[in-house]
Image 1 (cartoon, rainbow, N blue to C red):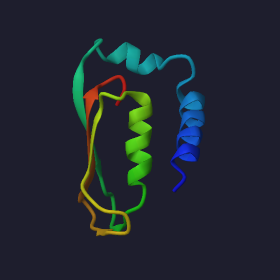
Image 2 (cartoon, helix red, strand yellow; image 1 turned 90 degrees about the vertical axis):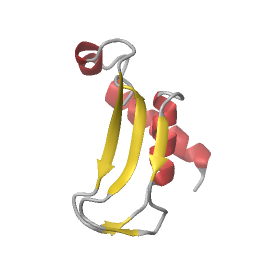
Image 3 (tube, helix red, strand yellow; image 1 turned 45 degrees about the vertical axis):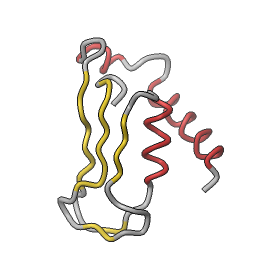
Image 4 (tube, rainbow, N blue to C red; image 1 turned 135 degrees about the vertical axis):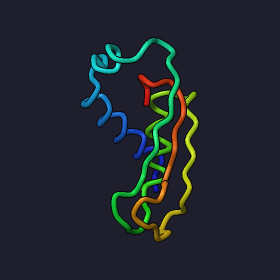
Length: 92
């Protein structure tokens, strides 16, 4: 995967989604509030996208810790924890 192209595409997607600011996050989370976000599979499948998860959250906030629990191409089951991110809630 071309990581430079991935970063460029993710930046474009995030700018379109967030714009100048994320009003919802700014409204419901206190500044500096910490938390955890977990990706859990709704159904079984074959995992793809670890680089997208890691790169996307790094673009939002380099302080976010990203843990991906499955490898590219690994088969996973419904309800399996795929990834977990911890950090500033407004960034998550």
